[in-house]
Length: 458
Image (cartoon, rainbow, N blue to C red; front, side):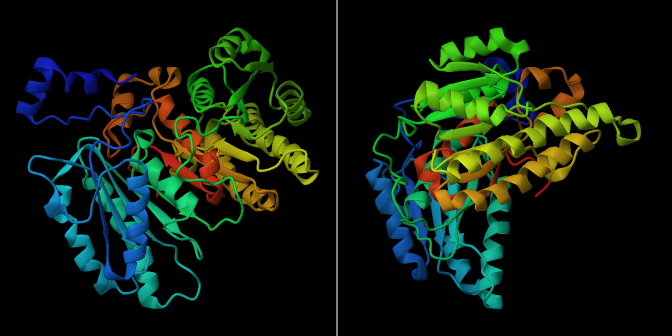
């Protein structure tokens, strides 16, 4: 679904013309294909003298995944390009200590391959940090987001932030590292994920079967008939899950097509119904023996300037986008407390509109910001039963809906990201599949933007 301009400036005579004229050239992004190498080349792992053990742990994990590792850019063969750079700053406590490590990767950036990856690993600020330590920990975030905007040719930069007690070698840290280095994160740029230490099993970051990390899981996807919802269903099924596809009765034919494509089952259901949660739980447990993953994707827009807003537009958006997930989650939380489901993964669709706002979308932005608040609060409630709750906030995604945006507005929206293009439904689906995976057990209560580092919001 790559847009026409991006295809044109990367192929044939139009590519040559674009180069001569100096036109912006969005890269053709590398997306996941089963069996493809994890990275496009060797990965340079760099850590300062205080973070040596963390750098060693990252290097050992990469080698275990079959990725060639370098510790000094000078050892890169002539003409060879780096597939990634991992910068470990987990124990750095003074601003002056960052300089040498950061500048050490400067020449390596010039040898980063198209669709390469830069990943920082640092520590989260804590309440008793010294002023120096706090400045470093906040500073890495600003450094990473700025660096991501400097990268070109489809390369991205993202960060892993370790909360107190977490280590580089922890399974969830390594799962996040693998995701950020892989083609699955093609449209995730300039973002961070915080990883908490987790006790117990079910969080193997190296995954015995990385091609099918959701093997044996039962997943429910709402709004699954088409678009992003259908892509989510297909990606979860590709990763091994049995998928229950949910949508309104009016979308029954398209819903059946999606369910058949993923060899799952279809459940025609209005998510705003008072018993929606109970019906979802009953269908999953009765037909498939359990429930492990719920993706709240169903959503609507009813755009209007607030000066012209009416109750019908406002209330319908709130009912579908926010109140329905809240009500369904209440049922799921109660089932978790009764022991009927354990280790539940809930992922909800937010939006960059809920982060930065968008003209004419006060109702939609209210609900999508509300999703992020709901996610953080639900994560705390699920923790006791080993569950997680996270949100994914897409930016401009190439869908049937965005195709109806006026041409000029659509083109501007596409170019407002560091990657200079819109994302694809599968980009959203890949992020959801990762957050739903066993390896992401230490990641909860967070919102991950899938927006190509859209130049709005934080």
